[in-house]
Image (cartoon, rainbow, N blue to C red; front, side):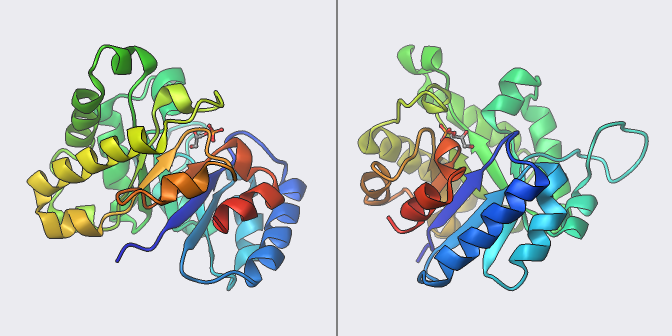
Length: 250
Ligand code: 13P
């Protein structure tokens, strides 16, 4: 049985004060919630420690939005897995499409970041997804399969267990244009098939594959009704407590 995950990716938004206020309000709203789903927030780096202090013991989990693959050293401007664990993170988003397209992260870099995360017991939320051009060229399955294989290159079954895969079609991110529940389900099922071929159906059946791209309180129910959609990675609609809680309560 896969427990649904609802994660909010705040991207480059919210000051420390705004983040702390959000966390406090979310705790109040979430306290009444059933514990049958896992709620995660991913604030910007500057807010992580302050939010961790607020959320301690709340059952709400913390993610970072990126990491560097090296443990420490002369890498100006970068943050390591050990630092994220120290600040209170349990999860880290790796390979988000904005990192891939705006910051040139390729599959080999993402592979090293995934490795760094799991070696520090940080659970990666590993993002994959095709562009509009790739979808229109009929290459969706080929692209996500390549991203999975190269991202998880040299990963054994034990390495896979902590990973959450997030399918985020690039054309649906921040555009208001969600994939239909059926379009998302088709790709999620394919992702599970690819993982099953590589690591066996039992393990693939336990993996959380979550969807991201213009998720909102109105479309979450239809997405979550699909058999292979195990949660959501929410951008814009996670920035407001009320709308995020409505998504959590889908
Ligand atoms: P939106 O929900 O704003 O489309 O963003 C999705 C996303 O990129 C989450 O990581």
